[in-house]
Length: 93
Ligand SMILES: [Zn+2]
Image (cartoon, rainbow, N blue to C red; front, side, top):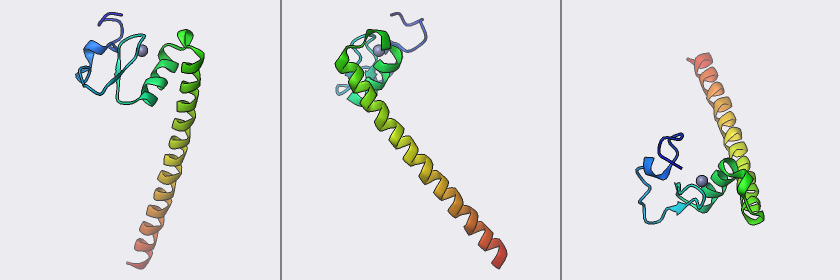
């Protein structure tokens, strides 16, 4: 992989030399933790994954989906709360 093939190579990233970075064995891209690397491998190198890597990707994907769903519920709850705070503020003042 070269630096000109999409801008996703390790050379383009300023944190590539971080001592605790987890590196993708297919393209050399650094990641902060194993879960992010598993997600990257599943999306960028899905044809070359081993069974263990595919299982790690699916587990990380499920965890990420659960986190996104929880964030959406919290954001919706906050919007509803904010709506009623402004509504009551407008009604009383
Ligand atoms: Zn990679």
